[in-house]
Amino acid sequence: MGLVQVIESYGVELRRSGKELVGLCPFHDDRHPSFSVSFEKEKWHCFGCQAGGDIVTFVMRIENIDYKSALKMLGREQPPKPPKPRPKLNGQKTPCLGSMPCCVTLTSAFGLPKNSNGKKK
Ligand SMILES: [Zn+2]
Image (cartoon, rainbow, N blue to C red; front, side):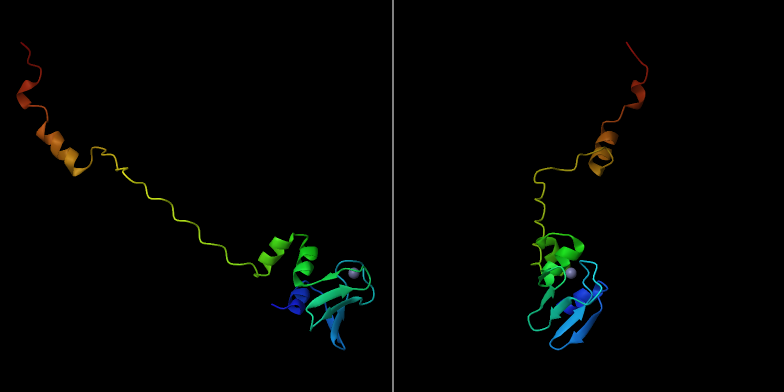
């Protein structure tokens, strides 16, 4: 998105005036179009409140955010690095909870003998 599109997306109506576009300044109570945008330079300037800058400055001011956040909003930030994959958990085996085949086999193999119930000497 170019500067003009960004500015217009904030509801600022721009009219062509020579090599520039003019409109009502969104940063002060503007009655006459004193907000001008230069196509060629990709810069904007307000003759009313003396604000001015480039596309990033515009977004910073209108959103009241810092430079980095403005870049992010404009999608001009370098793509963030993908997060590092989590290290694998080495040597940690799933604990046997008794429902594994190994346990079932053990339980039946060492189950209580039938004839040892209640008999004492
Ligand atoms: Zn202004």
